[in-house]
Image (cartoon, rainbow, N blue to C red; front, side):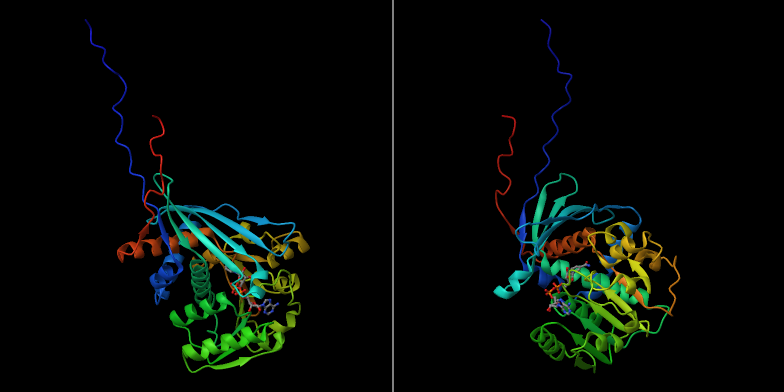
Length: 355
Ligand SMILES: NC(=O)c1ccc[n+]([C@@H]2O[C@H](COP(=O)([O-])OP(=O)(O)OC[C@H]3O[C@@H](n4cnc5c(N)ncnc54)[C@H](O)[C@@H]3O)[C@@H](O)[C@H]2O)c1
């Protein structure tokens, strides 16, 4: 009698399915509080990984609704390598009608997926992560883009919602101080609220002026931050920028193509930014070329581009999903360290699929 010997390899030990956790906005905020420099550095290293090709960051997908044309939900899938090694998806909605109903316009979650198994291992409240990574990246850009020119002492915030507040926190937390802070918003209540926030935080001995006129805000600021929700350009006059300010064009659709074409333009990622009717995208449609782009922030950091000081300097960041992943993974690891991770027991069920 012969013994039948199996030639099949031994069944590998099953990999453990990672636990699935939910991280609330309160936990996210605690993990990030007072960490402006650290977050700016981790956002910079994520951006460098992206520049070096150690990331996957496909175009964002815009879900729009014929019956609710002003609303949208954007999906930003991404994968980041280096030491971070995480995949995931940011899913962020903008429903402007919410504001009249008394709740914030934007809401978001971030899903983190395990690099080895693909399993989602965390769902994080993500409006704070999104505002944080945006503010950290803008503060990084403000620093790098002003190294060859006089450091601005007068900042003007054009549109003062959540992003403007986070941006101010990050500028202050990474060493900026201003003699004058200008504020302009279509809503007098929001302008007054932002002024109250500036007075409460009281960083530096700055003077705060609320400007009714957008022209006066721009002319009296050498660092201008656009954080409105404008869907199409409303600032058309290049002469308002005669003093050649640095413009952080975070909301992307405020500047007419003429203003873009009269400026030096830096973006975070060319393919991402020249989409979805951003001001640089409109400038490309008008001219039929991309000659008006000087380069990316990565080019600036690496010293590959020259930034003239005799024109306005406009930074338009589309906002990359890899930055959300970097900040989200940092938050997750901080919450694990604090022992406060809320795991959802049995989230992944029916793990025996083959009998
Ligand atoms: N580029 C990025 O990576 C990135 C990331 C996050 C948010 N954003 C953008 O930043 C912008 C601000 O986001 P938020 O969460 O602070 O919004 P928010 O709704 O909290 O605040 C927007 C503010 O802008 C004001 N405003 C709207 N249109 C204006 C106009 N034409 N002139 C002056 N003020 C105007 C509103 O009254 C409000 O106070 C949005 O456009 C958002 O899409 C960009």
